[in-house]
Length: 278
Image 1 (tube, rainbow, N blue to C red):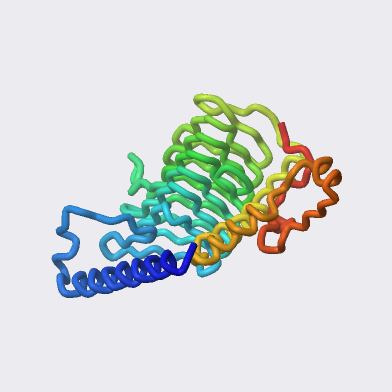
Image 2 (cartoon, one colour):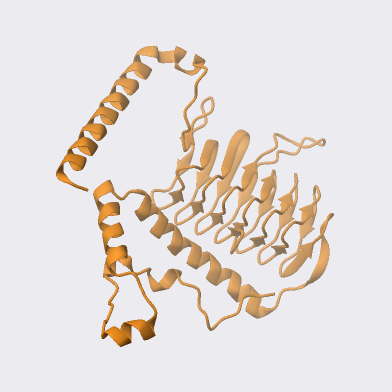
């Protein structure tokens, strides 16, 4: 980008920041009438009535995610792109080291037919998609997922269901109301039924996956706060140090060393020596 381009970009930033400042001032002046507007911009964290999200400073919430109302997100947890966590009629509690993967939905139930209160509780190191995590596009509604459990892609957990520690819900499964999945068991199908026991290797793999996702979330968090200049600089580096065929490089006598800015941390790369459970 040339000097003129940088100047235009700087002026654009100044105009946008000025506009945002004026918008915030207008919101304060509107007071209680602010929320009567028909147009609502996306907000990653949003109050509902007197309920306010409580997100740990070391947690990652993707820019396109929505965390609404009485939601608590613990240290090192991650809420990925397109997720909706809506704690309006009850509360949502997410422990530490847990990841809720892309496009997943977490909601609550005020109570069931017998009057039992049904918040959604997700423990530590859970993957809704990996180690106590919810996989991509999973739905968790008024349920409890204990520590180091696994909820696969597209799975649905209905009101009152419980996944015990080291329990696994297979991809696409439907767990009916008040179903309890015992520790170390794999359940799948519609409706979900017992399939088999988890092996020790699979249980260990679940824990490792949670740690990997925690590290990956840090990379995404850092990427999301990069300035325009940093992004442009990395584009130049990637173009300059783009990898070619090793044989082609050796013919030219070229040695390509990737700059440190472009090296992905080892702790988020998959261990190729280990095979994921089938």
